[in-house]
Every structure is written in C-alpha cells, then in structure tokens.
Image (cartoon, rainbow, N blue to C red):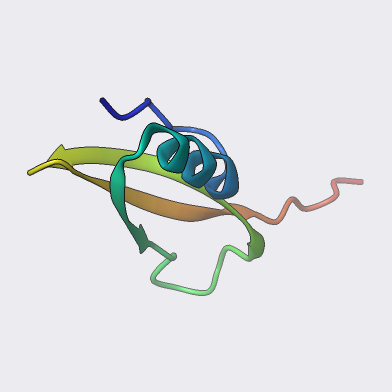
Length: 69
C-alpha cells in the first residue's frame, strides 16, 4: 500500500513511494496565465490518485511570495 503524500514536497513524496515499492507517475500543473509567479525549484504534491496499482501525483510549484510594505 502506498503512503499518503499529499501536501509534501515532491522529493520527499518520491522518497516515500520508492521506499514503499510503489509505482508512480508525476503530472505537473501550472497557472494558465503568468499573473502568479511560481518557484520552479519547490514542487509539492497537491493531489494523488491510485488506479491499477499506480499512484498518479499532481504536482504544483510554490507561489513566489510578495513582500508587503
């Protein structure tokens, strides 16, 4: 059985799934418009679905925070 990995960074999710011996697939989602800037170096899991013994992960990148004065 695959561990629950929603809400954690992708590198940690992959480590846990490999340790559990689970087959997985990663799909990256991005904002349609460029209004919100994202940090491509910080992907994290936002959705997980298990079908036919394969875990499908939907991954998004963290939004770049704006400093407020």
